[in-house]
Image (cartoon, rainbow, N blue to C red; front, side, top):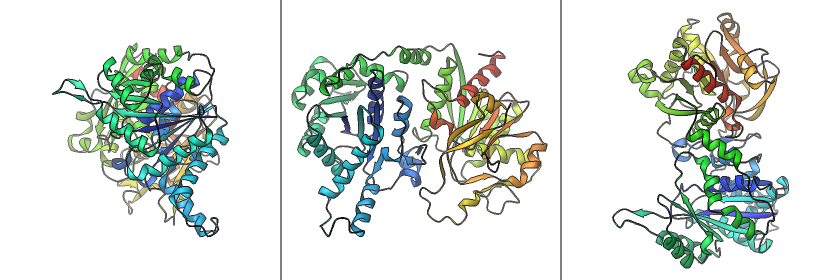
Length: 537
């Protein structure tokens, strides 16, 4: 087993996760089995109860783990299948250590950061290594070098690398090389300071990936190499990509990062054949078709709140050789200005998941506009519940129809709390989470897109369709095209005689990849193009 530890310096949001994922792509294309994991220094046990304004998207795994959004990058860029063991927070570490202390597992010893906290962190590395049987394990350390809360993780990986010995573990440090406009040059001092901070801890990076807006000139690379004590070819230019994050593996390959990694880890493997990945980039840069999709949400101003949704839409475009322009629409703007004014001209409408009452009426108006104007619609989780409420109000005539999540005393609770959720007091990790089987209605649009009778999709919700209203909805042409195998929970709905009106209770965006687009997003983009141009792709 070989180990790569990815750290970050200078500022946050440098793209450590993307760098780790892109490197994983290259190593996989060299024939290696790759596993990835993320260590997060915050004290939350998981990000499931954190606001998108604080953390961005919560990414859900098959086993129901609510994890950091970087794990989404890991699964999109590689073939690794992640579990709750692949994301570790300080909260989980301290919770485990304190439980062990209460249970007497330390035999009366003084419990300390070293060795107990660092030991727990190292145990997680070994657990993932043993579980995955991978050739290479890439571990990303969240936060920024110098943060107090991150010190136990850095000490843990320093000790770990020493234990496994040379040529078995390397450190990749992602840093920022800012361009000072007034001086007209890139500045290396922040990188030097960041590496110096690492070296104080006892970690000497083998590779430095330099995030920058302008190319690294030879003199700049030489300066970083000299002052950071790395070879010249270990200073990697990680310039902002021009079109898509999926360019990163090709960019790092041009910088020969994968060659360097394999040399440092003594991995004798052939070069990466990236021709299939190059075709993906071709479709992103010069697609044969183009469409506009409106994503109607409440966290639109946040880049990462709907990260997996945006990426899955792009994947649907790749599958159809179709460029997608995503229009980020604030649901509250629809409430103010009206759906027709805001959404007129878009090719398709997507309503993603979410929590809280703000913006709900705007989303309902968007679903109504899509239904009445024949605009292709895809609803995800809350987006399915929105479609249900809208149909109940305006087709069934259920005045005041709503979800009890937003209106406790609604006269028509067409969306209601799941029976299993009644009486639940702990809010963390208690929703219906993870992969669940869904039985599809044969001949339905959703079933045809999947081309399978049963699928497994990931969930994150507490509310569901109220079966008391199922017959009334069916009588008006509301098709229940997917349910749990016992038929009790509604999972998919669609409308007949509409170009494309489908909504699902689960989150298909979590299982979409650029080289394996999800069937629902592939079908959605195809329907948008066909509706606009009246001819199939």
